[in-house]
Structures are given as C-alpha cells and as structure tokens.
Length: 230
Image 1 (cartoon, rainbow, N blue to C red):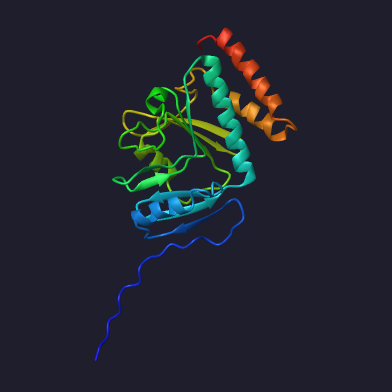
Image 2 (cartoon, rainbow, N blue to C red):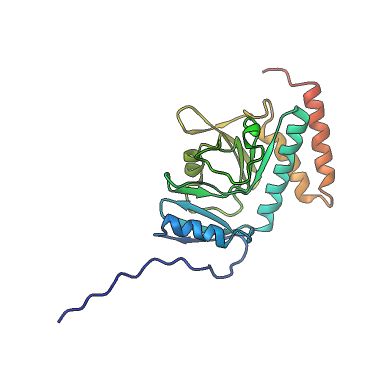
C-alpha cells in the first residue's frame, strides 16, 4: 500500500537576529508572502526587503551604510534648495510592482521633476504614480540580487551608487538601460567626485553640520558662477 504526502508549503519565517551588514536570501517566496512580510516588518526600519521574481533578500544595513546614505540625502536636499527645484522626499519607501514581480527599498529616493505629482500622496502605487527621479544605493553590504535590474524595471530615472570611496551616477536611457555618466541629469554640472569630497568630510567630522554648511557654500558659489563648458 502506497501513501502520499502533501507538499510542504514554503514558509518564510522571521530571520534570526544578525549583525548589521548581513543579508539572508530566501528562494521560492510567493508575492503574497512578500507583501505580508512588508507589513510585518513595517515598523522595523533597520531591515530592508528586496524581491526579485520569487527570491526574497532580507538585509540589515550597517551604521556606515546608514550614515553615508543620510548625508547624501542631505546634500540632495541642499542642491534642490540652492538650484530652486521642488522635492518630495521618499526616504526608504518600498518601490514595487506585482506585475513585474519586483520590489525593493532604496537607501533614499526623491521625486524632483515629478515632485508635484507626489504632493499629498500617502500610499505610493507605481501603477498610478511615477517612479522616483533619483535614488541612492550605498553598497557597504553587497546584495546578492540584481538591484540595478530591479531599479531599471521599476523605471527609476537616476541612480547614485556609493561603494566605499567610489560614487557613480547612472541614468536610465530610452533603451531602458542604465549608463554611467560624468554629471547628474537632475543637477546639471554636478559630478560624483565633487560630492564625494564632502561625503568623506562628513565621515570624519565631529559635527556633520560643518561639512553640510561647507557643501551649501560650495553649491551657492557654483550656482552664482557655473563652470565654463569644456
């Protein structure tokens, strides 16, 4: 007499407590479970969930990761103020599309060109609302998933990636591919190397208001006397 057993359902449980800077990868996770985990972890902002076609990654960012991301975000706010641009700050809000089976939480994201379209929005829905114009990725902890591919599919216009002392700007072209560029499309004439100088100052500063003030003064000078074209 033969017997059969029901297949064991895939269950994603709460990850064991791990040190900052580590990631856990879980395969075969249904979209519905991903959304349940987003709700369950909604108050645990020290966790980041990334979903790519059934694979879930749970990451615990390090303090270095958080500090660099926060200061870059502060610089973006200063740039919009000094360039006279609007801004809607999205923080690390979840960007996801069920149809694409992709979702992630950027270190920081912003709507600038499309800022007005996000005014008053309390619940982001990328089926209705435009994706961020700019997002920040800090790679102190390396993801095992193709986060660039997820950002590309979600349509994020410009992606700043900071990996140690290497800051890169990447813009999404008409061919739906990212191209590394020498200056920002959101803030014309601003280059990665220029921003990295102030990020390094902030890492070693006893008071981050000082490098932030230095950066604002530098931007004011740049706005008043833009660099000559090469």
